Image (cartoon, chains in turn green, brown):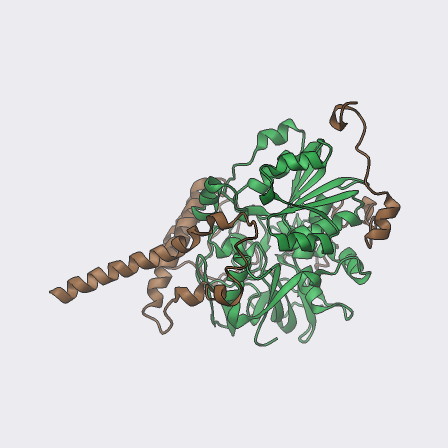
Length: 382
Length: 191
């Protein structure tokens, strides 16, 4: 089969790989019909996440058609159209039994600090991902869900991570009626978080980024006020001015490790990989939330330490909440929101690129060329 | 009159609930935390995920699988994407065998192994039918087809200040390796 393959930092190609096989009776093999590149894939692409091995296939956002099932699979059969959460999870361990699917303990021998994720290095279990024609899906009775007939395919693929994660990020903010919510990052996760904040009753929603085309999307897709931090000497002071010098009730970090930061932060985090990511967005979040407020962290960071302003978080009495999103737990409610027209994730898709051109897709997305917000990958066999 | 943070008053809201409901489809539908699927954080319900309930069958361990020493045992299911190989594989197995996830050495060794893996794999590609090609693999040609200049300049982008580092980070190893190969070739030819 054809598959995207990592060759080293900033380098990928498409090559022939063996079609995945059933390795466990609970497995399925899914023929991928649509995949996406996630902002967190860029951490892998830039070589920031430890134990990203040459030869691995990325991609944790995908939908497809069941091609083969293991002997123990009961709920799926070949031909079923399925959407697959980015979490690999068993559904039965201590954590899954409590709804923490992103923290499953039965799927990742490489680390106890993170669960299993498709196509996201060996640090998250060593599973190949869905930027390929076929993908192995463990625990096929637990993770995948049939795509409802009424659901658009592009909505479905965005529900496998970006939409669910943004919605989850707003929930972790514990938003109360009338709250002022600031979202750092106008990528897909930040845009959905901003839109979701309204669903939870926010009184104002403010989105911060430096890419004007993404801020325009924040105004139209998420109905948000926007600030371009590149236009201000100090965005924290600007946010204080914009919030009556009180600070926001809730701040959501939807940037994560890829934040550019100052030269020192950029070199130590993005280039030398000596931090788990440039923490500038998280530090801005800590500085711009009000005392006693909540910071929700949805941006992905690596397992190394980052130079976070923890003292300010302590002194301000903040609540810091974070996790990888347990996607399937969000789906029943999110399906209602999509069906009712409150959320239309496919409006975020800007590029549809054949698998054979995935190296260009990564560069376009990484360098933010051509107004790119969300690129989809279309495999040859789709 | 002192401004907001110096009094007990909450700042006035710019829009009422009714105004927001009229302007934003779905405003407030999840106002009640009971409608939020992630609340409460932990909800003990083993049937929630639809799993059969019993401990999963064990995936066969066809070759020794590295694991964190913080795990009591190998997990019943695991990925088999790229088993450790070569010198990078030796470093990876050492990192997993010696250091917990709590130790910086664990992660720094894995990062070092990633860089060694890149060098090993690139060298290996040169004796294969498909050598690595930094031009096509970086996707840099899309600069010419997807508005590389227009997307960057005159747009107040903060990241442009540091993007000059990218070609150096990506290109320098290739240029150094090329220069080294040229010198070796000249020396051999001069004998």
